[in-house]
Length: 196
View 1 (cartoon, rainbow, N blue to C red):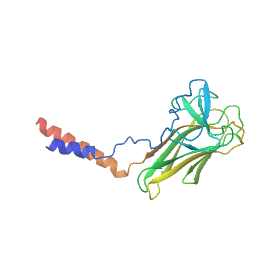
View 2: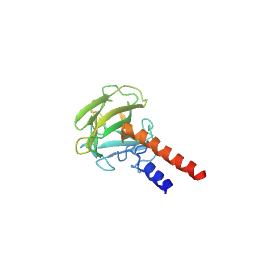
View 3: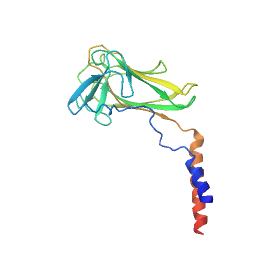
View 4: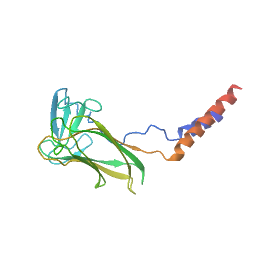
């Protein structure tokens, strides 16, 4: 019985590995985009898009940061993507994503801005084609929601920065680690008593 209680206590503790709350954050659900191809998509696959849609690529003008597909938000012209994230009220969150300027394109064409609940979080730009991973701490609102949005803001010329590997995860409260260790201690003690 004690073993079952220890296991139940351990299972009630949040895990360290947090699930990604973003749907299709690496753009891999666009399975029709095969190696060496690209296409423009409107809303769907977890994302809402602006009127110009987004360009999904597979080994065209670079390679993905994660998986094989990635997005460009300056498709036929500057556009945007957004997704509503649902979690718990006032939940602390970590946003991470990869950004790369398009090779051979000026910094004026490459900017992408990221917004959370219509508030500007940051602007990324540059030259070259090196992926950079960005990370930010955010909070869900009182309803447990947040609207994540990325927008191309450079020259609207169909050449822009790339986006990939978008992730939003809950940040465990500091007490969660202590609870996990306590649960493991209870389980270990229970197993030792049983062997004795």
